[in-house]
Length: 291
Image (cartoon, rainbow, N blue to C red; front, side, top):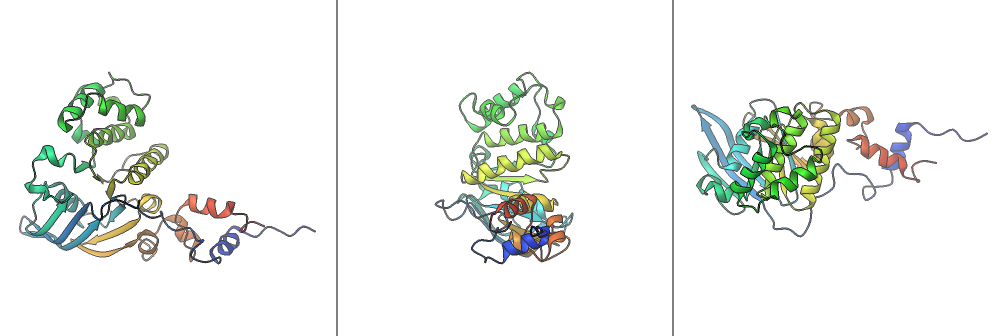
């Protein structure tokens, strides 16, 4: 009689026993060969309305690296993004982006160094048509005419120039806002809750786009509650609580250290090291793991 196929968990466990060199890690490693740092925060403290919202934050972001900032509401994630853009100045400590101090650098120069896609993409959308948004983005970034439109064509190929941004879906508005920000080709890209309101297909397109940007050397920092996104995309996870960094390390280590941050795949297949469905699929397709 034929030998019965082992169950899912047994097949995955057999895959994991082949050693760490063959194991599937969380999201890979950042692109190599780029400058050492895209941004730093050193002993950063920020006070707002008599409350200290960031306390002694130390963070380094490398080119090609994707970092997920995680933590409860009010933990300080959005405040840290604001400090990196220069919108908020440190109370004490220092922030640098591309070797410059953001809050002391003229905005036209910072557009080429750091870009923020806010929680609500409509905060960046003021014009009546996609074409007008793109023309304004080209002018703001000092880019050649048509630069933004080329990005939109690549990311949103079926959206005509005359479309009003308010007529786009949530995912399309997010993608348009991303194209506007990318027109300046900032070395550091920040996104605040980028998957809010997105369906599965739009989220998958976002992941694909951000992976390509990281592979091209862009540093990416995501403030998110989406543990599945962090598992799929981030090289590192930084957890904030009460304005302080309480965890900072490789995604696969940080997200499984607390049930609050573990994706569903990790919970179901514990104590295995798989975080995403794609990692499970890759393990199951390995001929050595599937008799």
